[in-house]
Amino acid sequence: MPILPKEGVVKELAPEPGDFRKAMGSFAAGVTVVTVCHEGRLVGTTVSAFSSVSLDPPLVMVCLKRDSRTLAALSQARTFCVNILSVEQGDLAHRFARSGADDRFALTAVEAGVCGAPVLAGCAAAVECELHAAHDGGDHEILVGRVLRVVVDEAKAPLVYVRGGFLNA
Ligand SMILES: Cc1cc2nc3c(=O)[nH]c(=O)nc-3n(C[C@H](O)[C@H](O)[C@H](O)COP(=O)(O)O)c2cc1C
Image (tube, rainbow, N blue to C red):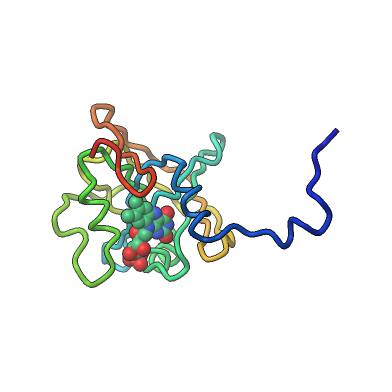
C-alpha cells in the first residue's frame, strides 16, 4: 500500500532555512566554476549545484542564483563551460565565489573552448555546453546545457565540498 502524506499537513510544513541548509550540506558535492565569454568579457562563478541529466542526448544542469552576474551573462551568451575543480583548486573556488570587483580570472590560465567559453587550466575535467533549456528553480534558475565537448585529466583528483568545507584541500 502506498504511504501517502496526511491530508492538509504537507502544504503547511516547511523546514527551518538553517536546517534545510544543514541537510543539503550533508550531501557531498563536487565544486565547479561555470565560465562564460560575453561580448569579449570573461565571467564566471563557483557552483556546486551541478549534475548530469541525460546521456542521450548528453545534458547537464547547473543552478544559479537569480541575482548572479554569471547567470545574466550566460543567458545572453547561451554557451558556457563547467570547469570541475581539482583538489588543488580550493583557493580558486573561494576567489570565484567572492563578490566585488576583483578580477577572478587574474591568477588563472585559460584557453577558449569550442564554444568560446573559457576553459580553466588545472581542472579535473571541463564540460563545454550550449544552453538547451532554462527552468524556474525558485530563487535560482535551472540551466540545462547540451554538452558539446568534454576534457578530462584523470591525474587530477576532484575537489569535494561537504558541510561547508572542502575535503582534503
Ligand atoms: C563551494 C561553493 C558553492 C557554491 N555553489 C553555488 C551554486 O551552486 N549556485 C550559485 O548560484 N551560487 C553558488 N555559490 C555562490 C556564488 O559563487 C557567489 O554567490 C558568487 O559571488 C556569485 O557571483 P556572480 O554574481 O558574479 O555570478 C557557491 C559558493 C561556494 C563557495
